[in-house]
Length: 115
Length: 116
Picture 1 (spheres, rainbow over the protein chains, first blue to last red):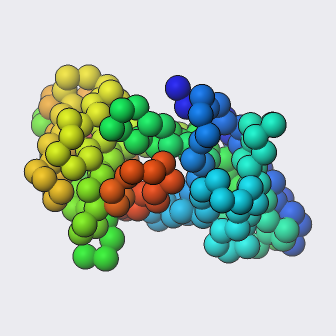
Picture 2 (cartoon, rainbow over the protein chains, first blue to last red; picture 1 turned 135 degrees about the vertical axis):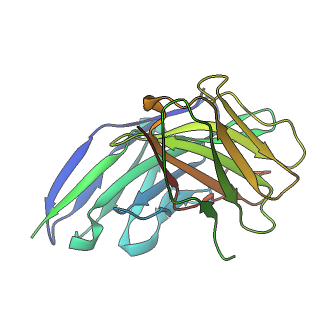
């Protein structure tokens, strides 16, 4: 079965410093991976997705993630944090069982941005 | 509408009562998902509908939970004899025909259920 592990429940950075949110996946075949963001009292929004076309994926708001098969990782990064980046981030893998394509969510990482 | 719509946005119910949550997916989206998010936790898969295929109900936590979807339209999630542990935000998502694994799912704002 597919799964994702988000290694940090909370990450705190200062505004203007780099962001690294870690995600490792487990997959028996080439996975489809996503990062979603959830701002307080708002719905989930897709940040980026890995489609196997390129290992470095660029998303919205300056975020990007690199798929590393050798490390089974799909870490999310941003060069410079902004206060508006404070939110909960979920790493997601798509799990195919027959005709079912359910999305398996990690436990989430809460990003705190200090002024 | 432009996005996934869920109703009600908030629901407070007494323990033991039945509740029905509604999801209107994006028009044309054949796949529909229900998830549960307890306070401070990640999303827990409940059920998946894809067109006319048999739904994947593997995530439903008990026989008190059921969901229906007619064709590619509205879905309802019903919780019978609600318990306090059912208190959570119930999220619905939809996506286009899922023939590849990387189709984006669009989420609604959720229904916050509180069982008192």
